[in-house]
Amino acid sequence: MDLNRIGADLKGQLAVRDLFLLREPSSVPGSQTVSVRLTDGHPDGFPVGHVVSSGSTWISYARVPRDGTFRNNEFLGEQTFEEALETVLTFARYDDIVRDLEQSGRSRVYKTVMDAERAEWLAEHTEPPGITHLGDGKVHLSESAVAYLRNPPPERGLFLFVTDEDALWIDGDTYPMTREG
Image (cartoon, rainbow, N blue to C red; front, side, top):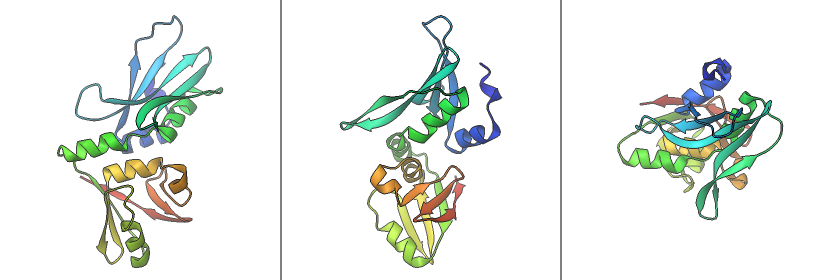
């Protein structure tokens, strides 16, 4: 499996999220394991999910919250390599790791603009932390807030999330974001 032969869209999603792929040693002959890792300042990064080949299909595992901790959740079904990676990107939760990186000095923000009333409403949310209304509809979102909103809990994801194109989606309206830092 050539990790560089994935499509441009998937490469872009990995890059914008500061994720990379790492081939893992496999103990089962004929199978392959590729982990999805967050760039965290360490050479091997932090694992947020992985995919495992099973014959001609792939199985996805994503880091998800469960019972007050994080565990790998298995996603079964026939998937290609890219589909399996996309499943990890869809379901993996790692905003807590990004928040720790922010507290240790890594600081990136996303900027967007919307009407002032909506910006005030957004900034009033306590979950996720890291959303600030700067006035005149200008909003800063911390990197951890964006990571959270890429895969929010179902009750929040019905009206507020970040799209694969790095736009903030609120009740059917989209607001392009730009990353700084």
